[in-house]
Length: 111
Length: 111
DNA sequence: CTGTATCCTTTTAGATACTG
DNA sequence: CAGTATCTAAAAGGATACAG
Image (tube, rainbow over all chains, first blue to last red; front, side):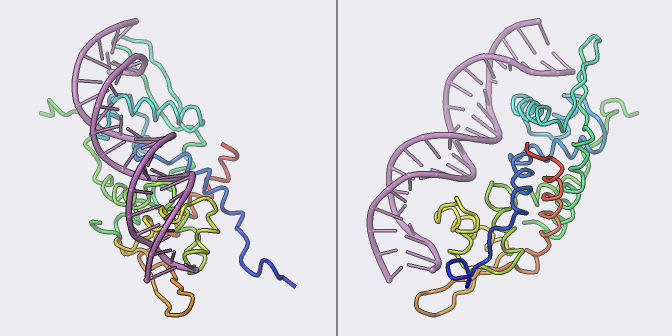
């Protein structure tokens, strides 16, 4: 008799979207991932590549992604010190998302 | 001879990502689009489907997406008034992005 | 070079009440 | 039902200075 809920139930597909959204939220995270998809990069390279991000924010985002297991941080003992960031296997799963975004961005033109 | 910039130049693929990012930024926009991908929905339906969004924020996001041309707003003259929201052709371009996100969300498990 | 520490501004969103 | 209007709080980010 479907009396009280004749309407669509909340789709369970909802949860995975939320999970991914938590990871990609923030204006900078996707851009960091974009460059790391290309190849591993050092801290200063990432900063220059992205262009307008401050080191504070970049550090914060990288630490978040490290904690989530999508980015790996490797310290190369040398002088001056070098730190290289790369995607983990899990992080590489995000490449299709970024590619889909870029494709849509092209169709959106200049908005 | 490549003295000052021996490093990789900023990839032009950057811009489309930015465009898409502007559109999808904010925690709610992707969720609204997710439900509209399923089928057109009325204001109150969207609010219930999403669950915890306030009408103020939902209105703001819908107006933004309208302005960008990804969502269409249709008023159905009736009593009580009905307003239906749907994706435009441009808006439907975003479906692959959301699907990619959901797929990654599954692999991310519970983080 | 790779960060950390402060402080401040902007953006986003939540609470709540109210209207046609 | 479909919003609008205020006000407040929280999150994100920018500027700047400084350290190992």
